Amino acid sequence: MALIVQKYGGTSVGSVERIQTVAERVQATVQAGNSVVVVVSAMGKTTDGLVKLANEISSQPSRREMDMLLSTGEQVSIALLTMALQERGQAAVSMTGAQVGIVTEARHSHARILRIETERVKRALEQGQVVVVAGFQGISDAPDLEITTLGRGGSDTSAVALAASLQADTCEICTDVPGILTTDPRLVPSAQLMTDITCDEMLELASLGAKVLHPRAVEIARNYGVTLVVRSSWTEEPGTRVSAPSRLPRPLDGLELAHPVDAIEFDTDQAKVALLGVPDRPGIAAQLFGQLAQQQLNVDLIIQSINEGNFNDIAFTVEKDMLAQAKTLAASLVPALQGTSETPDAKPDSVLVSDTQIAKVSIAGAGMIGRPGVAAKMFSTLAAAGVNIQMIATSEVKVSCTIAAEDCDRTIAALCHAFELNQSPARLEAPATAQGPAVRGVVLDCDQARLALRQVPDQPGMAAKLFQILADRGISVDMIIQAQRCREHQGIQTRDIAFTVAQSDADMARGVLQSLATEFGSSEIIVDTAIAKISAVGIGMITEPGTAAKMFQALADSNINIQMIATSEIKISCVVAEDKGIAALKAVHAAFGLAGSEEIEVPA
Image 1 (cartoon, rainbow, N blue to C red):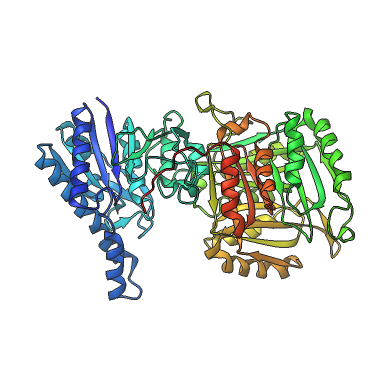
Image 2 (tube, rainbow, N blue to C red):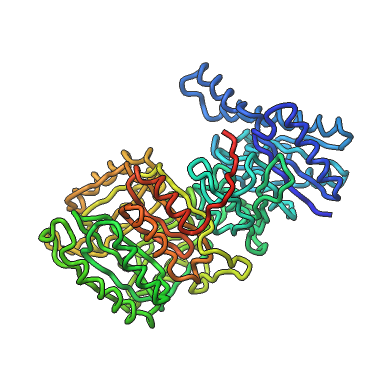
């Protein structure tokens, strides 16, 4: 007998008829020999209606009373579904978040789960009952016992947290789409269903998956070894399996407050190559990395900083024994780049530089998503250790820095101490079960703004100060890129630092840069809200050279200029002009053969 947790969203329980259909599916799962816990959301647009009522009563309703109000939506759903099950002769009992033992922080509207006291649920299951649980809600610890809600994706989070606490065999997220798709089918109708994906890939595709599977839920699944299946509420199709690492003996107390960083990774076998002052036009990155791919040279980090006039810097890392070959190929491009700009006198000729005395150090963890300040803590730790950062590359679940090789040991020790961890293996290896296409999915994010501060002193602590202030303001930073070119300004060496944030945070972030510009003696602040970020994700790219080159070539073939590049082991992200975003998505999706012959139907 298996224990299965099923979650049904608001659309799936949006009417009496749909509730009855869900009851039929749940009973069929029980009759197949399983114990079942069902987590449901509020019916249809119930939550929207409750919010509207609150706003008609008060211009600024308190968060506490909003939690009290919104939690009632799920109670309607669980009572009706339980009645439907009982009407079919299936023993069932409904429970609120408090009754099921979901204990949260005492934070209204976006609480995180501390633990789940599962004794009552287990007793009901032993009695042969289906337990129908109100998602999205919990209760704070004694003595106040406040009703709390979990915020966006709360029902997904409730379901996976219950699966982890009960050590369920599977957690099924039943929804109105057939599973996880290779991209947004509303933009690319030829997007196809994935049969499987790893938690790491799903986390990197957080923006794509948020409408089907929230990153908080994936984080719990990854941390506690929960197998997820995302499938349609209306068919018996298998959907998409989201595979997690093997279940680890991790304590369930502080369930959602586990360390945001669970690994310190390092690699001392890296060398850096940088082309400085290359023309800022479509095709340059494709030309460079295409030649590297032709020679089967596997590139690790790739960074293209914010442009300066008509020029850019592109830097990448390779294994040390590949450096000579990589330099030769990059050098062969320099003559072709000379004089290709419309203003050839605006900059010195392109320059090739390399460095073998570097190390890459990374912090990694599923808990980094949505927690401002993790990158800042890394930078502050390095600053306190007197370690200067040469390159920065970020993703949803990893921040990587290159540093001087001689600083590697003390950097690892400092980071392990700061994040209360032991050091981890040097390189991420592709699991044998995750072998597959280099790219599984492509995602477009048009809700980003790009900011940059020119001429930041090239000294330990500068990045730490900038990103700590942003974190203190509650601003989550996505991409972070530190320019390779080091220039003298007012007698000191400086670098440019660029980053992206949500458009809604752009004005606040601009204010932070303005406050620091005078202190740093910086000369210019850049803010651009008309950008789009296109990302390709796949664990197979770890072992397949040329993945980045194929992506860059697809953009070049569509005459789309790349403004910034940042990579992790399993993700490549490019910033392009906002009006080119959809075209970029379609080009990259097609380049990796992700399009199918049939179109996926997606509810409006």
